[in-house]
Length: 197
Image (cartoon, rainbow, N blue to C red; front, side, top):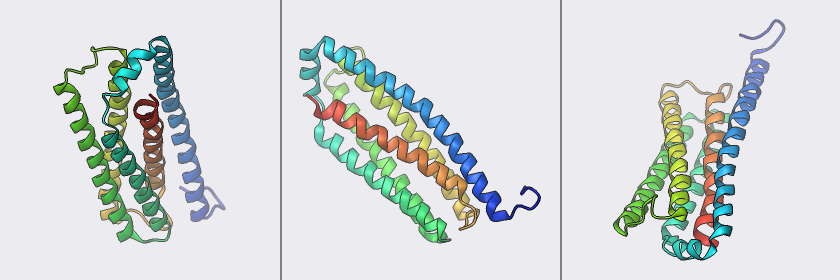
């Protein structure tokens, strides 16, 4: 509810800024979580570079690169959706959210295929430290992708009910920030696991 002498537009802007502050605080804790895993990977890799190099060769770089392109495209569709609703284009927002969900599902499908290949080759989390960290980091990222998909699907349902407009779209903006974070984590994971041999 707007404060006395405060216009609805000012109230909406204040609401957006407050929500952004909250999501940035949450994302900071997520950065610490993944930062700890990146540090653990570095420590174990320095301790056993030969084994890490040998196991890194077992990863499918084509699938990893494909997933990178998919997530970059999903960041684009989210950004286009946010830009659309800022202009009151509800149909374009719905299309962009649906495309983002499809791209996220494609990402998880490819990651499933990759895991299946590793399991077929008897490469499990208990195989060695490389695969323990690989499964931990990519698995945790996949959990974040699933959480993002739930948030995106919720935004799509609300958009179909006409809940968002050029004047009010704070939940879409916050979901978009979370999704960009998920994509950014993968941008760090891909070279760390797949490219640096």
